[in-house]
Image (cartoon, rainbow, N blue to C red):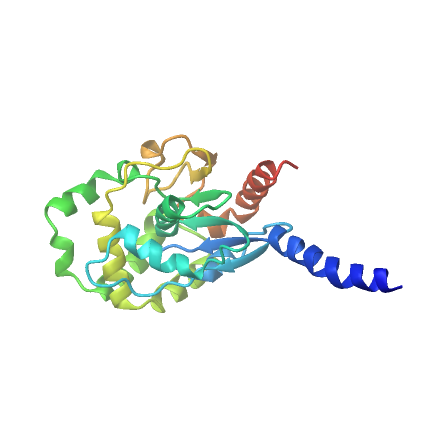
Length: 242
């Protein structure tokens, strides 16, 4: 009897600890003009998800430095992967350099500065974007997004609401992070990139080796959630040897 009691006391904590180490969390990083509601149509099977919450970048902060600060929200004592949309994907690339996620999945994003339109290089050399405040970027996006990447009224209403709630200082400093981003490398072993054929914000012609979503736009995380979820789940399952 004593042996049984001892075995229970000794082994149960070890088993529980082992189970805890097998837990996995998928961290979701939304785009610059959105929040966790962006992932309302994303269904990740078997694993818990947690949305990374944006803070305002420090004045002059680089993408790499900002990514390191946000990464403090990730519990590295457990297994984890990162899914990032647009700006969130760029941050995920930077996080992957200093952390050990099992997978990094980008949606409508860029892996390096070379996948960002040339216009951003122009602004890097001639920083006229600094003349505009954060509210300009908010309302400019609200006006233009529906014109060149339309979505139905329900999604348009949500998109607009997410944008309106954004901190103007965050918007301006996030724009700077993107324009000044100088990354030229990424880990091809763990990074997968999902991109839409009709993304006009980050045109697919600049993207190296993406998994394509036919007719997907820059807002396809909302509008093509079912297709994207299927790819994400396949990638995660494949990496786990299932």
